[in-house]
Length: 179
Image 1 (tube, one colour):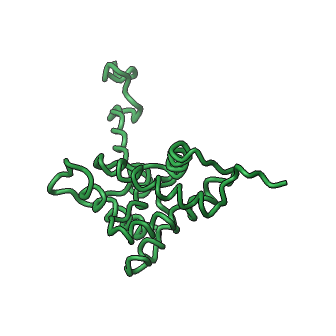
Image 2: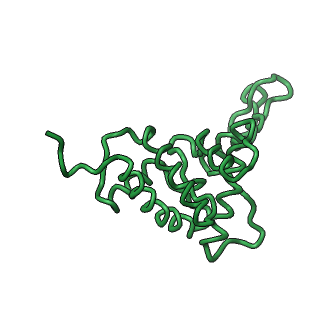
């Protein structure tokens, strides 16, 4: 006998998407902020009281497709650009659906996709965050930025060498063999 307390999946998706929009608007109220796929799923489950055993990675595309539709219908910025993977800070290939829905060109590389998402995130911040700097530019998430533009470490300074013996000088700066 079926469980009468179970909500049909499509109804659950609709409820989660409705709950996701204000969550994402709240995320956009802080300049530079974003949320992980798991973080968003947890928040909408808590808000709606409806859960699923589906893996977050399987649920996310279905949920975000609904959110994309709601944003388009309500003339909202692309709030799904605020949702990134915890492991690498990327929106991933699913973000292409946002660009297609807006009639924009789908980027040819992952880096171009992340730059497009960064531009959409900036629009979200401009719509909801009261303190976006006037000179703000689209920025990759810090995790992804660190991956594509690693901080270059300064080359170690060469150790002083004795000009006579060619050996590294001790901390005193005086060659033991010359002393």
